[in-house]
Length: 220
Image 1 (cartoon, rainbow, N blue to C red):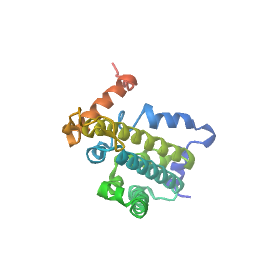
Image 2: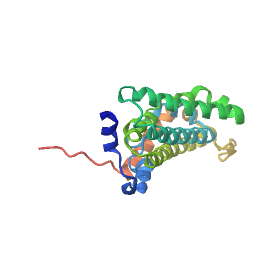
Image 3: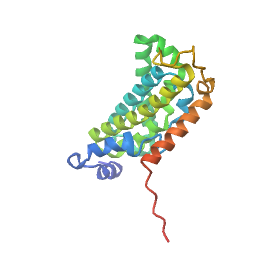
Image 4: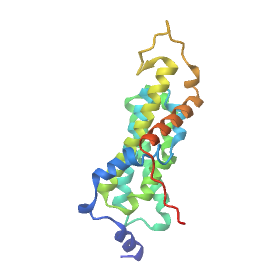
């Protein structure tokens, strides 16, 4: 066994000592990849105008992050360190292509609406970040849980932003009229790209106010 493999094995956590509930809480809430780390916000611009789009994209993120974490973890001792990032991108791309083809085969209308944005998951820093920061160093089961948790955390933010954008911009939720055009004037700003930034910033502020990030200790 190479010294590289031995060093990676030494950083892996024994499954019996893993706090799975803590991993779930971290990914979904405590260190949410959007509200806590402010990652992956570029997707908000295009796909959060409707809740339906956000739900599908959220499911795609959960699937890709979970499965890529699992496979990276399974292969962590076989992947040479010098090409690990290339291997991680190849694994992520495989699951993104699988999901994209699934949409085209069974949900063609949604595939047309999302267009190229599903393929952009390959470059999403959340997916790559979890593979590099967690899966490459830990056993498969904790890595799978970590991928699911971070995917859910990201999906929740997408859906919350889409909920407000669709309601304020179109007066609907999931296509059902909530604010009738007889008395409600649609706010076009929230359908446009700035609306996504406004909602994302407001949501990040609210959630960080409720659950403030821990301040780093500053040495005297």
